[in-house]
Length: 213
Image (cartoon, rainbow, N blue to C red; front, side, top):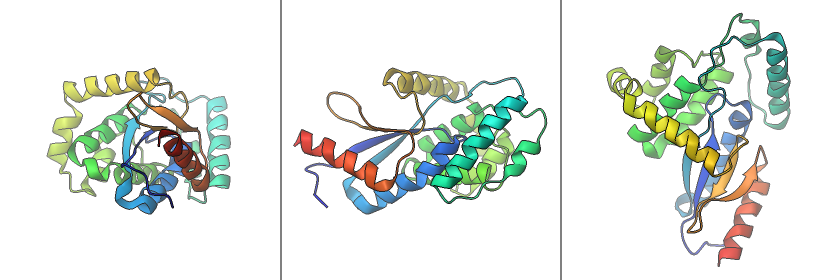
């Protein structure tokens, strides 16, 4: 593998309740492991159904179920399809996004691992991540106490910061989740939009780095 002249930073735009991100996060983790200390990954949080207030309608459930099956075809990960038996479920991702942002502030080095755990909790274990007490359970796995988590999670500052992050993600043009950007002096450069395999992501990264050299 070519050695990059400097440690590049990738911006991984994701959402903790995004099915395609659930499939793609293992790809990002493998890339980071392969590149060891020669690559930085910053997790950015995108607005996907944040602030939703209406329960999922049957046609929305059907679209989600199709999406989950497609993800499972591309990435061999477990899904708890009992999710679709729930009635009156409001697919509001804002609490989970706020929890992930809280974790990024409290455990920045572990953000990608927290994201992986949140994805697994929601999709594989059927944990309802719209509930703060379930989010606190996930945070405890990373040594974040309930009191510390709630203090940050419920603060006005974290809510404002999350909204600013949503706006930033929209401003850089990340309209699909997952998306990966290479950060640089001219601003973020899009590498991939949507799910892809590790070799595709790594090829895109190398092409961009070679153009910069």
